[in-house]
Image (cartoon, rainbow, N blue to C red; front, side, top):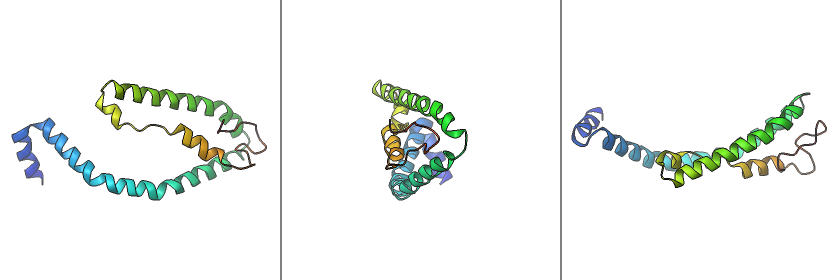
Length: 128
């Protein structure tokens, strides 16, 4: 494998070879990565909601979250806007950066039924 890559580097150049190798690896790994993502994402969401509920039972966490959640949401939105605008301008790296699923996060953490995310400790709801 290493000898084949070295020969290809000499023939086509470093950039073309690296690009070809990256595309090959991506083509091989993408289906498996999508499979893992589909399989483990619901469990990860469930664990995140469970951890959020446990943290809200701590005395100072709801007050801290009351300050941090809006800031994190704002920063996430700015990040998403920046990634999208730079991708539109033609920066190739930006097209590979993931977006923060702000709406999905709000939906997952907002699906608490009548139980608030801050239970009896506060009055903020992440879905708002």
